[in-house]
Amino acid sequence: EIVLTQSPATLSLSPGERATLSCRASQSVSRYLAWYQQKPGQAPRLLIYDASKRATGIPARFSGSGSGTDFTLAISSLEPEDFAVYFCQHRGNWFTFGPGTKVDIK
Amino acid sequence: QVHLQESGPGLVKPSETLSLTCTVSGDSISRYYWNWIRQPPGKGLEWIGYIYDSGATNYNPSLKSRVIISEDTSKNQFSLKLSSVTTADTAVYYCARAPYGGFDYWGQGTLVTVSS
Image 1 (cartoon, rainbow over the protein chains, first blue to last red):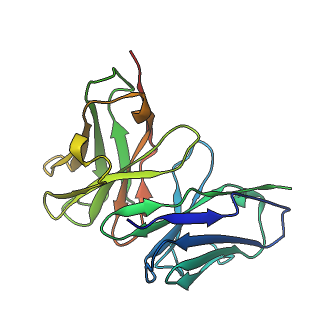
Image 2: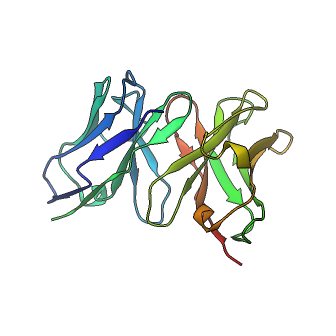
């Protein structure tokens, strides 16, 4: 079973700053990694799939990179609506999620 | 536009079976992977299982012994049954579509509480 770990658990930043979130897999997942944003009381929203492909309607300030075991989600300049929890997810024989990184306002 | 809507009881007694249905509009459940995912209050996401290809299923190994996902293509619905529930099964339950590796459309979620 592939385990995903995310760091940091919490990231405190100000609007306009760059956010860099990490997701590490316990073994290689090639590029089969997705990222989601979740706000309180809402379903998650797909941001990135296949490590670096932006989903439909996702702003260009969101970017994904990485392959194998190490992946990064970057938000180039935080907007007020970007403060949320972010999850990574892998699809192998089944789907697994990371524990999440909370991006909150400093 | 694809829309998913979960429905079912919000309260289930311990040891009983949780049953939910997801009604899909804007797409056919005969293609892609149709999933159930849950999130206990204040915690992370757990994939439960999916149905695809006209009835084939795949389940999370940790839940496999208690889960059945089925479909009704005439109504464009798929359903979840989780047996022998405990308080640990209290969660928001989501249905979601996965055309490839990611879940691109989600229902709004429904809170199911396990309590006597």
